[in-house]
Length: 310
Image (cartoon, rainbow, N blue to C red; front, side, top):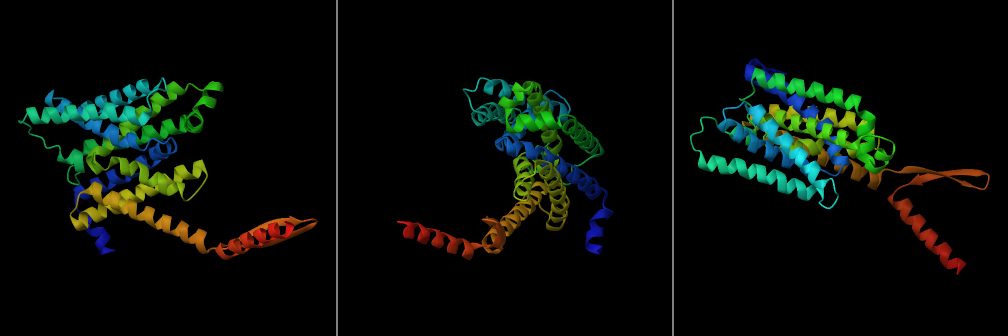
């Protein structure tokens, strides 16, 4: 217990712990829609575009969040417009638009060498860099995201699984997609100082994928993914403190470990756990266990029955 309480004596760790909890839950919630839409690359792309915007904003003496948010939102809108016709796939549009914005930021850094601010925190995350302003921004974005997901639950659900059917039923999929892009951009901007640009995609995808392996229910997947993301943030920050490592790296590594454990559990469950199979023989209801050996036996028995019929 003393080991867990020791870091809490430091104000910077308390700030970072609160931020990582909110960011983890936020990314876990948003990540469900990203994974189910098959857009896992979007988090990686928009974070790079936001980084380019942060560099541009710094050269113009703008606030970090203003520059990064404006460029990230612009990138999201451009991606939606480019893919609207259907001729260009979303992964190609993401690669073109966001890489161009990131390249703009790199080009400015290479030309303007009088930076008084280091962008290392934005790239890799920085446990020491969380301020009261950061906490306010993260809390505001988290609350806004929860509110929008609650209010747009059904439109987001329909648009995620079947956008064509959603349009038929009168759901304004364009507006819904724009709203989703808006909250996704805000989530990425709020997460940059915690997990860094290089790790944001993983924090969006890992909780959702892990939750997907635990349930087939969409509502439960939202809950599980949010909890997993929060746990990743909590434990990852402690690991970052004790191992003196980048916060984003430790959060992602712990999340990857959770994913591997769930994957192993599912494999062992499918491989060794027997399942009761219930079926009817005439008027008689019959049940017997199903498992690897039973399945092999049934396949062999079915093959034998076919041979006898011949």
